[in-house]
Amino acid sequence: MTRTHPSPPVAALLLTAGLALAFALFPPRSARAADATDELVVMTYNLRFASTNRPNAWPDRRPGVKALLDQYRPDLIGTQEGVYAQLRDIAADLPDYDWIGLGRDGGSRGEFMAVFYLASRFEPLEYDHFWLSDTPNVIASSTWGNTNRRMVTWARFLDRRTGRQFHFWNTHLDHALQPAREKGATLIRERIAAVPANLPLILVGDFNATAGANKAYDILTQDAGLRDTWTLAAERRNADYNTFNGFQTPRKEGQRIDWILARGEAEVRATEIVTYSHQGQLPSDHFPVVAWLKWR
Image (cartoon, rainbow, N blue to C red; front, side, top):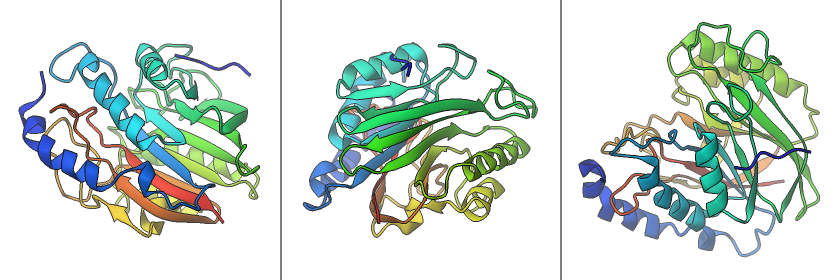
């Protein structure tokens, strides 16, 4: 198998104290149940592509991304918008992780739907990519009028801790065209249907659609049989925050466009929208979403 390795805004400054307090109230790993050794900590995170333009340049945001990931230490992370150099930075900051990815324009070009995983726990047994278009196996294809190419990166993992296999899929639906979002969700549904039903599956991503209020969500949760870990969770933290913050004062409108969906019998202990700020700097224009789950 070939692996691909790779000045603070005023609003954020005003939020630092409050967000830091919220972060402290929910200690990520220490919150895990003592007997939950087979628990999976899953994160979806739109990184915002690397830019050198201030404010919110990638060199200024990188320490915050590292600090956040160090504290939550997810077992699996699906990232969106990361470009090759940016993902290499993250890989350097996370030496315990390996990653799989391909640029949506082919090779190292364009944004990635990268999958990071704890190398000591998971063995990737197979992986692949496809494009959200009428020609999904054609690299960099786009046929639905969307100007940004969209894709899926997926992997089948062996969990060395439990001996179980499962699929992990990562995507980013179109930001502008609702028909493209719906067609993308339909293609994902069709591809998921080809995965053996006895294998659990996790789908994460930035869907550019509010959960529970968009047909793309219905296609995946009603037609595809995926379940939203957010609604399954026994505890939901920061439930009223929008997951897109735009590097502005976070809004509490309940618009969750970043999802973690699952197929299979899963027990979800908690899920969280991580409203973290690092020294006055929001690490991304999206808040990551985390779910603590285990297969029954």
